[in-house]
Amino acid sequence: MPEITACGALGYICLKQGDYPLSLEYLEAALKSATTHDNAFHLPLYQLYRAELDLLHGNYDEALDRAEDAFDLAEINQQHIALSEFHVLLAKMHAEQQDWETAVEIMNHGIDMHLLYSRLPFAADAMLSLAHIHAARGEPHAAAPTLDKALRLFQHMHMAVHIGAARQLQMALGALT
Image 1 (cartoon, rainbow, N blue to C red):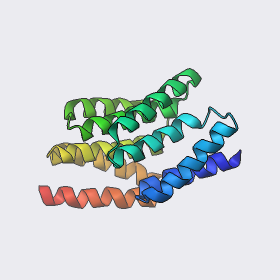
Image 2: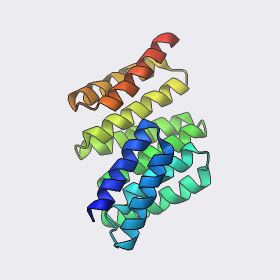
Image 3: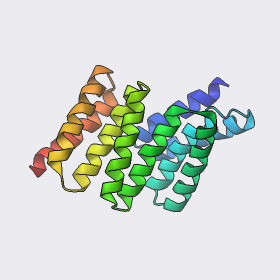
Image 4: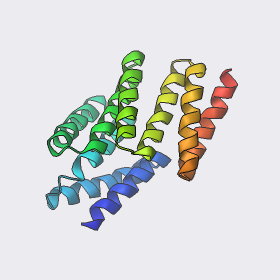
C-alpha cells in the first residue's frame, strides 16, 4: 500500500506546483488504489485534492459533491487533516463564488484546526490561500500580515516551492500598495 501514499503525495505536490494534468493522474491512481485496497484512511484527503482540481477546472458542483463525500468519510474516521482541509477547500469554493466574508471565516477555521493539531505545513498553505483571498478582495493590507506568517512558516520548514509562491504574491501585493 505504499503506492497509495506515494501517488497521493505526488498528486498533492503536482497540484501545488500547478501541474494539474500530472496531479490528476497521480490522484486518480491513489484513489483507485485506496478504493481497491479498502483503505479509507487515505481516501478523504485525496478526494479533497481531487475536488480542488475539479474546482480549478470550473467544475464547482463536482468539486462540492466530492468534497462532501470526503468530509463524511473523514468525519466517520476522525481524520483531522482531511477535516481541516475540507474547510480550506470550502473556503476556496466560497471565494470562487465571491462570497468573501464566508470564505475568510471558513479559511480561518481551517487554519485554526491545522494549528490545533500542529499541522504547520497545511496551516501555512492555508494562510497563503487566505492571503490570496484578501488580495482578490482588493485588501492588500489584510493579505500582507497573513502572507508574512505563511512565509515565515514555509521558511522554517524549508518548503522551497511554497516560498516561491508566497514571494510571487508578496511582489503582486507590493504593486497594489
